[in-house]
Length: 631
Ligand code: AHR
Image 1 (cartoon, rainbow, N blue to C red):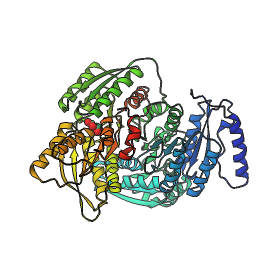
Image 2: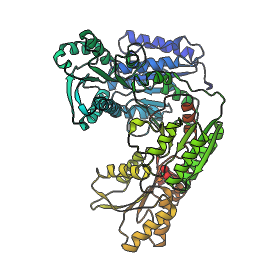
Image 3: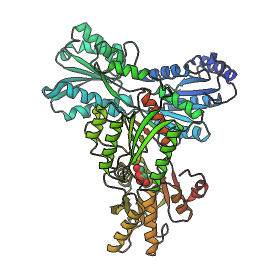
Image 4: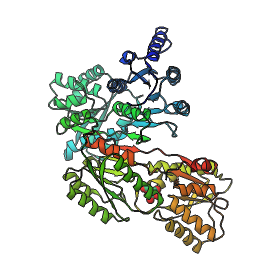
């Protein structure tokens, strides 16, 4: 770590003393510090505020954070346990700040209550990494967490395949019903099983997540257990209890166990799969490793830090357990070998796209990556050709920004068969079967959230006083993920606000001309009767503005205009008083992409999604930000 800060060893000593004093007085529940107190060269302290230490995976997270921190001489962590109380967690954070932490990692007890506290810390200039439960808004530095519903669903789908046409009986062992994580996993699991009509689920409630309780329960339910095919439970601890009980009853060869967690370590999920005692586990990195990795990048002011990292979960059984353990242990390495990347870029339709292409080309040079980019001019056929040519060339990684979401399965299977991993950049694809793992990760914006932000700005700034406000939606190209998802997010918030309706919508293909055409075709058929235009990108909004002006309709005065992207041209239009608001979609994803390429080539486990940092701007702030725009 290269950050130059004053040595904090003495602060750590004071901190250790203060925390121990607080502990001895019973006023502060502190998990003893990692051996950071013995490190002399510490320049940065990371404060970790854990929601509670009752749930096993939270303990695992703290252990992983410690393990990772121990690899660096110059950083140290201090951890606190909020014991499930939000007011205690607020107090813990104040203590940590008082002790001079440089970065806060928090797993919030209550995402709503803690949201304000997180904002306060972030506003005070201390970077905050939120883990596990996302908070509303964007007043934090980075969010890292899993998708628990998907984890449960993966376990369910695996069991459905396992039982096949015959179907069967499954016990779902439920731990603590108050655990949000467990509840989400269970709900995903049940959703997957419900689709298969031939499986009966028997829910058995433990009320706690301990190994012993699971063991006792399985023994007590012997009559039922003998008749079932699979026992599902959503944590490694409970799974170990189940496996032990099955063995003691001589049923371990007859009844299969499937769980979630897949932790490494003796008798944890991966080990139980290796021993052949657990049929499968859905593993998901707990994120400690990723958190420390990103904390270092943040403290070093490195580029390439995203806004959200959604961790990848995988089904692990005997067929891939060894490979998975190797992957978890892999470190990012720069062995000096030049990585070759084939990039299929969608086109040159907008200023956003030009900035995006530039960012990728410049970052490839910066990261010493050999980039071969093909521009597809909005043609899926051309993208297929490009991908096939990259396969022939034998590149190390293929990156695709797809023109539309669907139709990629075949060509992606070809890349997989050739052993070339594929990263989706900026736009994502929808594949027939997620379990095929045809892509490694998605890096780009949260388009659904962009749509929501646009409608939230309208709700808060364009009053629907009395009548209904009529909205024109100018969409991108049919079938593209930003088109579909921005529309979805926009309509989601719209549906909660009865004073607004979309009265006209058409496609403008993300181009200036397309935006102009949508307005001109509307005017050819109607008198102007629109209060708000929501344009899915800036270029179309600027085209619409030109057309409105040509017809004597005053943008922003006669009609409010909200667009997505927030390019310099959009800022200029806001400063001129023509565009009302721009929701940011950040095209500068080159550094994050190249970091992901490096990680992938080092054999590192890739997150499911890596989401970029974005904000909302309107005329009230446009002047302040225009000079700082990078695109
Ligand atoms: O996929 C991102 C979108 O595509 C941008 O919002 C738009 O301007 C671009 O062409």
